[in-house]
Amino acid sequence: MAEEEVARDEARVEEYRQLYSMVTLKAARTVELRTGIIPAARFADKIRRVALAAFKGYAPREVIVRDVSEFNRHLYDIIVNKMGCAKGDLIRVTVEVAYDEEGRRLVFGEPHIDKFVPESEVKAAYEARIKELEEERARLAKELEAERSRLAQVKEKLEEVLKLL
Image (cartoon, rainbow, N blue to C red; front, side):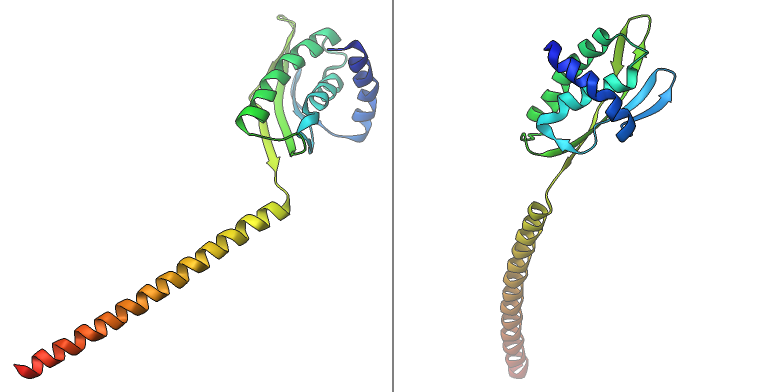
């Protein structure tokens, strides 16, 4: 991690504290961090900034940067490899974090990652599905009509056979 990036993030910490409520205190030295809705490419910076803001005064800066860096590698695997998010996809990360004073480390819980899909993609998907279902309905209606006509023919033949008996 470049020292200038960390310094830049620390400079923004106070701004984050004032403008955004990205941290919820859960217990002593335990917080819930939230990134807000961000492009997937920005998750590492955002998690680092929010963690620096949340644990400033509780944990040493080196510990925060080290443990967040490690956690961000884990998040990268989830976001890119498992969820298949592209850089521009919008996501929101929420994770519970505790500071272990004895071990001098941040302990991260399991992250909850929401992926946001543009309305145009959702609309295109359900319109395609509606078209498929309408085609299926039309095909089934034709099959039903064919079956009715076949049953009408069978009925006529049965009536003829009945008259002959």
